[in-house]
Amino acid sequence: MRRTGTTRRNALAMTGALAAGAVLPGCGSDTDDAGGARGDSAGSGTRAAADGASAVRTEKALRADATRATATLLAGYERVLTAHPSTAAALTPMRDAVRAHLEAVSARKAPATGPVRSPATGPAAAVRELAAAERTAADAYTALLGEAPGELARLLASVAAACAAHAYLLTELAKETPA
Image (tube, rainbow, N blue to C red):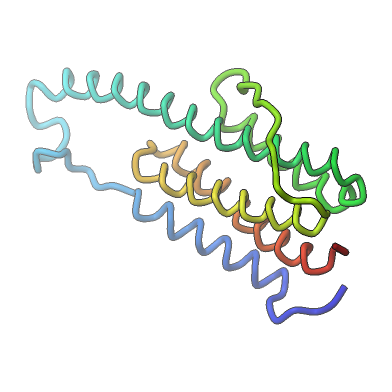
C-alpha cells in the first residue's frame, strides 16, 4: 500500500471535526420562536404538545428519507460485492457498517431495494462509483440535519461522518484496485 499525504489519523480527526461542526449549530437556546422564554405563557403547554406531535411526524419523515438513502447505498455494496468478489476483503467491513447504519436510522424494517444498475465494468470503476454513492449519502444526511431533532441530528451527523470517511477510503482503494 502506498503512502498518501493524508494519514488515517488525520482523516478521522477531520471527519470528527466535520461531525462536531454539523451538530453544534443545531444546539438551540431556551427561547421559543416567538422570542419569549419557554413556559412563560398559558398556551405554551398546548403549543409544546402540538410541536411534539409535529416533531414526531418530522422525525418519521426524516428517518424514512435516511432509510431510503442508506438502503440504496447498501444495495450498491451488495451489487459490487456480487459482481466483483475480488473486492470483498476491502468492501465487506464497509458494507457491514452501512448495514448497521440502516438498522440505526430506520424506525421499522428497512425497505427492499431493487437491483441497482451500474455502467461500471471493472472493479476499480465500481469502487469509484461506491465512493461517489457514499459522498451522495453523506450530503443527503447533512441536508437532513437542519430539520432533525437532537438525538436524530446527532445520529445523522455521525452517519454522515462515517460516509465521508468511507468515501475517502474508497477513493484511495480505487487508486490501488486493478482495472
